[in-house]
Amino acid sequence: MSKSSTDIHWNERAVLEPDAAAVNIADVSQRELETAFLLRHLCPVDKVLEVGCGNGFLTGILRQTVAHVDAFDFAENMVAKAIELQGERNNRFFHDNVLAPGAWNGPYDAIVCVRVLINLRDLEEQKRAIDHMTRALRPGGRLLLIEGYKDGFGELNRVRETAGLDRLQPAAINFYSALGDVRAHLDPFYTIEAEFHTGCFDFLTRVVYPALVGADKAVAHSEFHRRILPVARAFNPDAFASLARLRGYSLIKRQA
Image 1: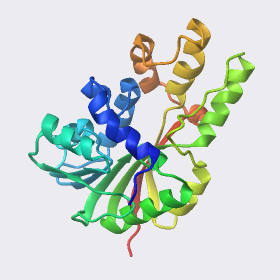
Image 2: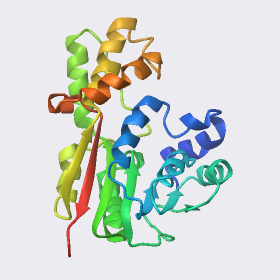
Image 3: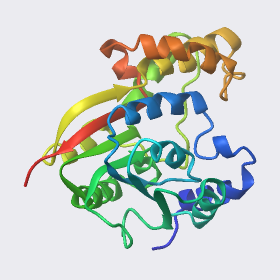
């Protein structure tokens, strides 16, 4: 399958970004929130598939918690970096495509997919990826899905405009679906065990922070992000969910 401009971006970023910890995501504070949610829903005996592993940063954490991780990426340079930086112990790194998998070794007890669907071209590709993951998961297994949706950007921009701030522009390399469209495709196959959202974190970092320092200065991860992490962990009520750029689910596959 030919690579999209987004695929090419990630393949190049694997070798151009000097900070290995920031290759997969520059906002490393956000990643801490994501990872904490994932680890709460994985078991020591789990055989896990990690979709879109990048340079293996998350793989190195997951393999300390579970029995085995199969981790793949569509970017060849990312896979090479993952092997170089992390090595292989109770894990395997390989090149593959979520839209046309060829080397998955399921069924899996859990599948981890974090900010991968947004890198696909459209909703139809996102649905196809979900279908492949569903088939690779054992009945009763967990799909741990954390993705961005356009709903949260819309609500954040409504608040930003009210506060006199410019609208956020989602990354051009990403495609954000409506949460309801993705949920409609998931619901026939899964029950929701737990939910996660970044509403408080996004309100603080995408509204409060730019209001304090100026929108032109609030363009990257900062010390502010690190300092408010304890607040975002301790206080993230459902009322903030509408402002969340990211929504996460621990989904249990229904019995056949």
